[in-house]
Image 1: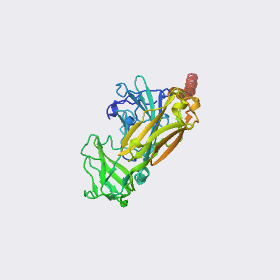
Image 2: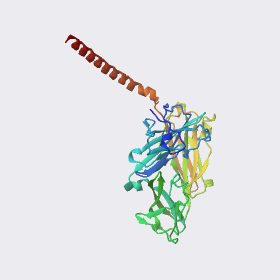
Image 3: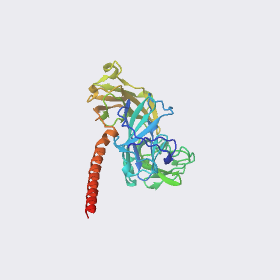
Image 4: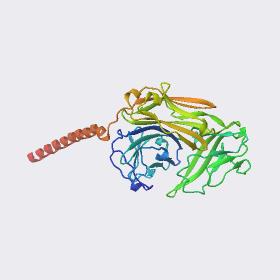
Length: 384
């Protein structure tokens, strides 16, 4: 049985468990696979609201969220009596995360008229491997720069007076307001007059309490130091994989997300090509289009995102090269993507048929043997 989870509180007793069909019929199969990292033993939130959809009215009161693990084949172990993995406002909470939680998590979001399918890749590592999931950030020599403690949303939003401890390597950073400055209620460390010696790994720590249990929250940042030139060449951070899976006839969105760093959004162009030709020239009917350009700021870095939208996916799209391109005065970057057809998935009840038949056969054999034994026993008793 697969679980449909819907609640507005962290109270596990409020969860509803229902049988639901695998969401092969989702109109919008979005390939925005965001990577998320966590340390084993620390709390984690998989946030459904990281994704925005023009066709989904998020204010719909009947909006439901279904979470699966590993390509819709494994049930999220949440239900009555479960206290480690919880659901709050559609977000999946791990209190705490463990190594076996690593994998792909799929969130299916439905309202009365639409269904969206997205995925999040989760990596969970031990403390000793924290550098493997370090968040890259950069600073420029001679300036006062911020080192941001990332992904604290949800843990600190109710506590405006939280305080971070900062370490460089394994050494506690001395907040002397000369070299380093940090204040309560802020998620960053200010490094004054940056020098090349300030490069390296920085660790920020705080705590989070839930129902009397105290959890540590740790993030590791890899700070790289550059010269005074603050303009950056564009770097495509998504998609990273060359292959994207999609179902024939589904609506597919592939966002192209480009890091432009300190460069202005205005100076960078992002577009999609197919066979080295602009999308609107190849698909004048609008079956495949470029979506609206979004300009984002995350951890004080500038990003641009331009989605490629298939409505719907057709067989001719498989094995075709679709290319995202980004360019500014500092350089350019391209990333090719191919779409592969997703294997059709069976609904839960079809997959359960062989198990049910096997159970009936075994049960029938067992009952037949019991009946024979009883009949034989009765006959002997009567004869005696």
